Image (cartoon, rainbow, N blue to C red; front, side, top):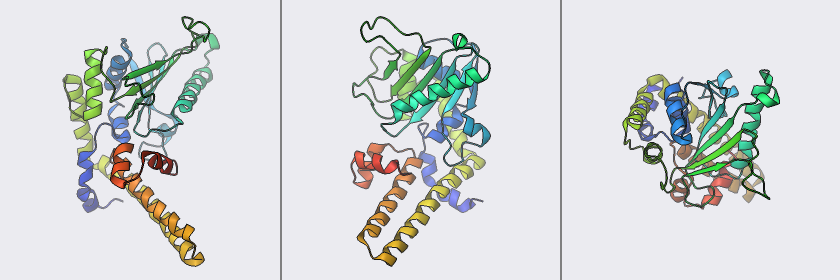
Length: 286
C-alpha cells in the first residue's frame, strides 16, 4: 500500500509528460487516439483499430516492473502495429525491431494464417534522439535489393524510427503538430489538445498515481537493497571494488528516478555530471 502523504509529496508527478512510457501507454490504449496517431505517422486512412498491450502486459498490467511498455494494435484488415516511446538511445533498438516483427508474424501464424496470407506488420519507435544522425523526423525502412534499389521485397514488414527533434520539412501539418506536441507537450491542434487533457486526467487519477509511485518505490527499494549488499561486502572484504560498486549503485538509483520522471539521457548525463555513453552503459544494468 502506498502512503497517501508520499504520493502528495511527489510533486515531480505533475511534471511528467506524454513522453513518459507509462503515461504514453495509458493514453494511447484509447483506440481512436491510437488510430489517429498511426494515421498521422503513416499518412494513411485506417477504418477501425483494435488496441491491446503486448502479451506480457495483457496477462499482468502496465505497472508491473519489467513489463514491456509498447502499444500493440490490429486494424480491420488484419495489419498489425507495434508502437513504443523510446527515451533511451541503445544499440539494441534495431535488432529489437526484428524481434517485434517476429512476434507479430508468430501471432498471425498461430491464429491460422498461411505465409501467403500474412498481413503487414509495422513497428514504430518514437525516439527522444536521432538514431541515424541525419536530422530527419521520420526514417522508414523496408527490404530492398542491394543491386537494384528500385526492387522492393514485399515481405510486408516496415520499421519506422521517428525522431521527435528532427527537421519538419516535407511533413504534413497534422504530423508536424503531433511531433511538436510529443517533443514539447505544448498542443497546437484539437487532437493534441485532447491528448494533453487526457494526460492531465491520468495524472490526477488517485489510483493511477498510487500505482505509478508504487512502481517507482519498487525500483528504489531494489536499488537500496543492492546498495546495502555492496556496502556490506565492502566492509567485510575491505576492498576498493566494493566501495566503487556502492558508488555505482547510488548512481543507478539516481538514473532510475530520473527515467521515471521522463528525462532524456542527455538531461540525466548533465544532471549527474556523467557522459551520455556512461549513462547508457549503466542503464543496461537496470
